Amino acid sequence: MVSSLSFFMSVFWSSVIILSVHFLRKKQFFLNGFGMSTVVQLYVFCIGRMLVVLEFPFTQTMELPGIYNVFFKAFCLDEHAFGAVRFTLFDVFLILWGAVTAVLCAVYFMRYVRSVRSIRDVSFTADKEAEGLLSEIRAKYPSRMRVRVVRCAAVTVPMGIGLFDRCILLPTGTYSPEEIWHILLHEYIHFKNNDLWTKMLIELFCRLYWWNPLVYLLKADVEQILELKCDLHATVDLNTLQRAAYLKTITSCLQKSGAESAQIASFSTKFFRLNNAGAELIERFRLVAYPVSKNIRIFQVLSIVCFSVLMIFSYMFILQPGYMPEEETGVFYLENIRLSGYIVKHWDDRYTFYNDDGRLIPLNEETAEMLSENGFEVIER
Image 1 (cartoon, rainbow, N blue to C red):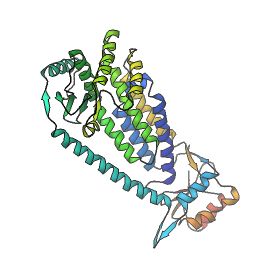
Image 2: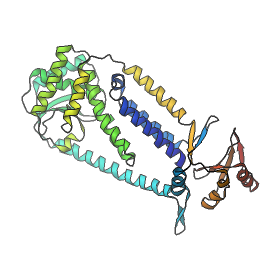
Image 3: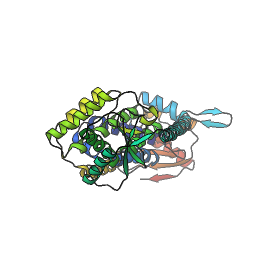
Image 4: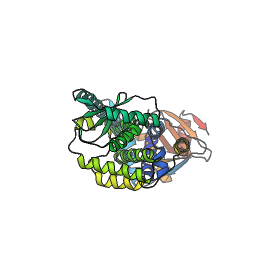
């Protein structure tokens, strides 16, 4: 069961992580290593911190008096009744959260199925020249994954599609061999980095935490991060003239682009995004203009270490509503909560009641003694 205090701490720390991603996304060391493993770690942290309710000897309680008291009381403590059923607003939120998430995820997967079906109805044309260039790229960047390339009249922007059956779609326009090379290299790197899987995980993350506006900032950041990272990896071995030619290919494709199939474009990695293309391209051009060294493995190790340290650090303190001693008589809690659980006496002589519904209720010594006399177990930590 999700504890309200643990839930609030999860929201707090996940928001810190999202804002950190936002401020770090222009740093080259961050771009090089960011990928699916980072997003999976974000999932593990957010969900794990929410469900795992632990208190260690070093855990400190930080009381936030004032408006937090009013919010916590109204949202988590005050009970309402509907017939014989008693509930809090937090209970209602959890039910609404689960229901809306289920609907949003169902709609997303239905869109995905429709997208796959629409792709099957599109006519593709083989391109021997492009297949030859892709073979050269595969030889230069070996991988066991299978990728094919075709021409498609339904798209005007080069893109990669397919989580399993990976395919690069080229518009039917005229492209020079050099432009095709750069396009194929870019999309091949996307597949090699599992960027489509990363995009899907972020889409599902947005549907899981639909009530947190920061996740939509994360979604926009991740889409640009994946493009910047792909540009870095595609051009790291190129000299100055070759990087200039790579950027020229992007502008050339932008000039040839037009309206695209919404169904196909929704589940793809594109050479560039038509919406807000100007600002994003400026950022990509600035980054590609200077060579960088790869440090992917180091970043991935540091990422695991940082998430692990952050998980431990997140248990160092718990945000709780603060009450003045004269208000902390226990009557407020006894009147608003049906108590069923045990009392913990902390090493610093604080008392907390661990209710069976997951709530952690701060007590003063007088109230703790009164509850102990009424049969509640006291555990010393």
